[in-house]
Image: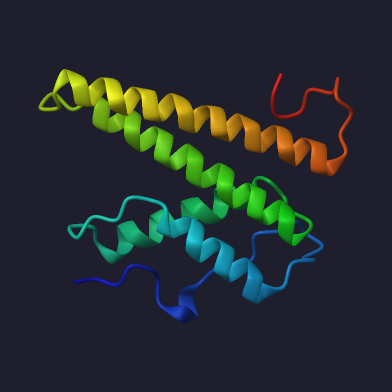
Length: 137
């Protein structure tokens, strides 16, 4: 069975902004945990796992976290988004019962609400004005 994550020498550890204020060990751990929230199928190749890792890194970097708590908010948001999309994907599979489809769509809705709450909390943490639309209208 292939390893879950890229080899240690291949780990991208940079998730913060250009000034690089987050410690590399913290960035690596947040990235590792966030990447672990994505679906990992035994049939996946190392290249597919690496792509998932890179996508998690890109998603975390899009938040440009400048301190550890912002990176933690970003990780929660990425994990909630990933889980919501997986629920919606599974709900579309033809072999799922209608009861299961309803439950999966309900779970996705709850996860999307969680994502929005995380984004609002991040905005409040960053001190953005309440009327300023940045991530959420």
